[in-house]
Image (cartoon, rainbow, N blue to C red; front, top):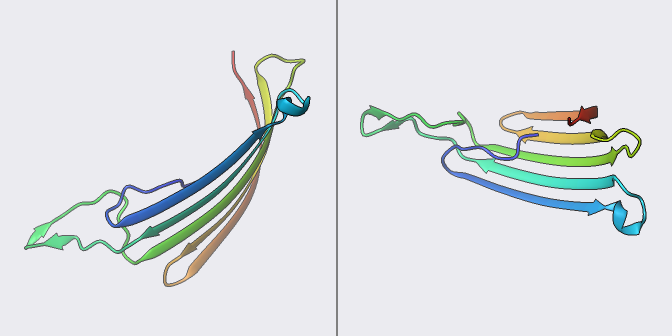
Length: 111
């Protein structure tokens, strides 16, 4: 997921909420929710006759919104193994609108 950009004239907001279910007796189960909103204005690449380079600049005003939910579980029977299911819904608005929706399953092992 895109959490922020480094371009000039960018406003980015992120709200993240998580919960560890071990507090109610389910050790290893965690949930996470995120909301991200990014507004980035068009950057003028020419200033007083000089070419200016800006990282991650956009050619048109852009508004992006992302929602993400994640549930993960640390398997107690296999130390270091975490399984997670993630869902992301994204929307990027420029002159046209692009919607994305992705579901991911991950297995991570730390040794």
